[in-house]
Amino acid sequence: MARLNTPAARILLGLIVPVLVLFWWQAQSAQGGARALAFVPLQEVGATLAAQLASGFLLNDAIATLSRAVTGLLLGGLAGTALGVAMAMSRPLDRVVGPLYHAVRQVPLLGWLPLIGLWVGNGDEAKLLIVSLAAFYPTVLNSYEGVRTVERRYVEVADLFGFSATQRFAHVLLPAALPLVLTGVTQALAFAWIATIGTEILFGANAGLGATMGVAQAQQRMDIILVAILAAALLGFTLNHLFARLRRHLLRWQPVIH
Amino acid sequence: MTLHTRIEPPPAAAEAPATGALTISGLSKDFRIDGAALSVLDRIDLDIRAGEFVSIVGASGCGKSTLLRLIAGLDTDYAGEIRLDGKRIAGTSLDRGLIFQDHRLFPWLTLEENVGLALLNTDIPKAQRARIVAEHIALVNLSGFEKAYPHQLSGGMAQRAAIARALVTEPKLLLLDEPLGALDALTRVHVQHELQRIWRTHRSTMIMVTHDVEEAVFLGDRVVVMDARPGRIRRIVDIDLPHPRERSSPVLHRLRDEILAELTGPPPENLVHLPVREVRA
Image (tube, rainbow over all chains, first blue to last red; front, side, top):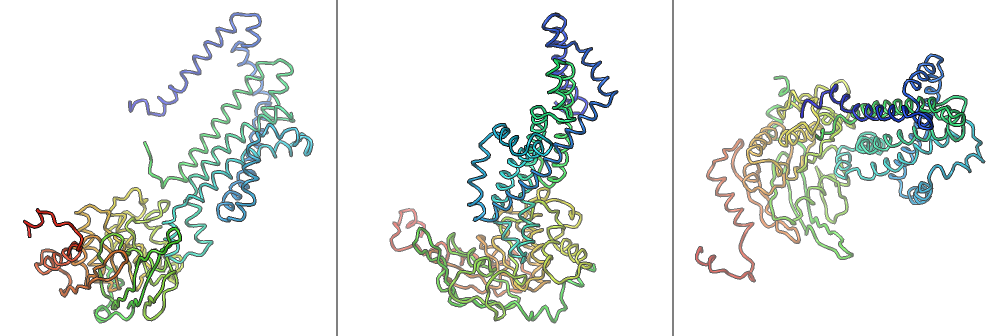
């Protein structure tokens, strides 16, 4: 089975199902009538893709969505990690903020949308707030667990070598918690990406893949929606892949489990 | 090798180490379990000379690991006195090193980073640290593995790395809590010889807790035999043999058998005497 593990083989294997779906899709659209509207012929989607690329619309949308997602991920992820670590290290803070956090995170982000719309409007600030929240929840949870579960035996070593509180934090607690912190960020990345496109669809925007989907839906332009979906899937996949590589590099000290 | 010019003290100093004498008097330690006090150590008195190697043996639950943790300063809640060179122990200090049964290297750091991090709060100038770290890695024969992460090392190598990390701060007193307990028999013998070599060149005081009586007599100037529940010193055996020692020495074997007999018998009064036992006797 070793041959199936080469990069080329892995790409080919991953493409089997999508290619099958494309054939099935084309067969559906060939039936004409209502089906052709729901299943836009692939050549039409291709033409739209080429047009969107040429006009720069697609690039513009992609950049807008990407920067929203990354800004929200940074803001929410940093705040979430900071709060999670602080809660794990301070029992009073955990007692005061913990219950509120666990109650609030039970409410789906969609549930907050009407309130946020009312308070902050539906501009860029509202969208950024929602994306940040999407990144905030999982990072709090995982960084909290990460710091809480640091093994006492490592802390004892820090004590033996006379580490100050700051040294202990920087040299023991943080690196020991890093695997779970990064698990939180991985989840945050996925949630932030989804939340970005979702809020763009619901709130609209000058530019953005979700905004374009929303407009195209109103105009019944299936081809444009498909191009946007394709772009969202590919960009999200790439983001995830890049982060996974970064994560592997940061955790290169862990034994590789096959 | 340049390494030994620094690590090996001049012969005069090796014979009479000035510091590292430990005095334990009236040391008792209780643990509270469900509100009831459980005595772990009961009025321990022990004087250890500077530069001495003392082994401690005893059944599980005799409080020998607790004793080391108290001397290390990881636990400061005790009655009685523990003094290193006359100074009462009230917390951890770079004067005292502790090696655990599990190597406790930080998995996120390479071997040389692990050893180097121990120097964080020493006053050794930054410029010299890399050299000192390299010397101590060489001391435990791990040169070439500086960039390896702990999971890439074998059990014996990781434990030797932990020894290098504990020695790099040059503690006056090195405490070893069953440091070789998790190693296979062959590696164990090998690291025992390394420990002996290091002790002979460093001449810092060492106290080692072990389950292995043979190891205790092979390395120790004295062997402290402890009783369990509560932990008390039953007997102290002098091992009056010069170092380095021959593992096959008949004197060592006799002392080992004597201590083993001490640890396993005499049977308590209420023990039922089985026929088999009577026949053997």
